[in-house]
Image 1 (tube, rainbow, N blue to C red):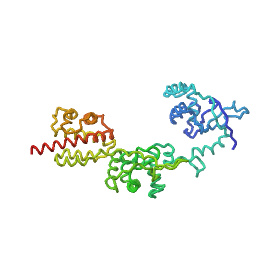
Image 2: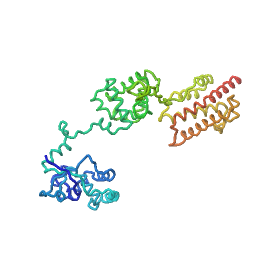
Image 3: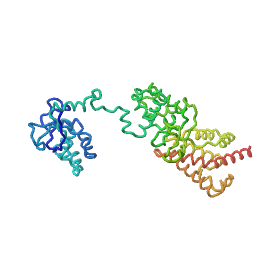
Length: 443
């Protein structure tokens, strides 16, 4: 089938009254075609896209001659058989006054932006006649005809193209489950990919399975491989069954599922330095140099540090409230969802501890732990220690008050909270020892 590609004036190209997008016998003029496209085919979006990005160079306009053929193709009129929406958008950008009245203002604004990049001529493929165009239009707009026509991407192929961290994690996990563990089929992954992406976009679900959320590029795991595989196997089973992992799930369901995994599928709760999902080593080969292991990325802080000495002193003191708070503080995982709760818990713990040590209710715990108080507790009186203690007390007092009392603002900085509590451990130990000593003296 003969065809040729030339540049044609947009004003010589006319919309197709026989466009399959139009209801039969509804288009008698160019104006009718233009209004139908504008009202039913979202041409304004096409125009906006053209103004921002230009025309797609991978997608030609297809035309046939209008009327008797002339020898001079540049003086021939044409009917567009492929690209009616794009030609309609160009006509409206070039002359917004022909737009439907309710859309004219929008096209005027676009036309102002369009002036510098205005397109008067466009590359078109001239086909011999309408019958000759049908075979190619079928390839574009019909089904794939067993592979002959344009084949649309399936959901997974779209995700591979668009990319993004959430997509990359789900695809990598699926690849591992299918190719390494042999627990997922190609058909199953196609049906469940979108649901898996939703669940794996939740930081608690990723953490429960053992997927490190801080690694850029290659997906990493931070649990022992046998533990990771046990949790991933359960995730795949639940994904396929659709009972616990399903497309109707909301944020609360994601959180509940993470708790379920941690409670029921734990071989070991031990964390490891993040390693590549598909590699057992972090050794990087450098051409022309001896292989040397690259430093592993430091693992993230997952909990507020627990002190066995503090816990034993709390048992000796016998204050159930303080003991319960301290247990929860060091047990609950630090993440975006629980950090505000932990902040308030730490604030209450120090508030209650200092009250038990004699703090006046009208005095803040930061003011209570004065230089004189620190000296009486038997702690190092150096300025460096005092500054570190007071800075941590000040930080906890401020973020605790805000998180507890403000209706919106809260602390989400888990690592800083863990660091403050680590700095305060000597102060907590010294306070408890003094309280217990006074108990014995008065007892």
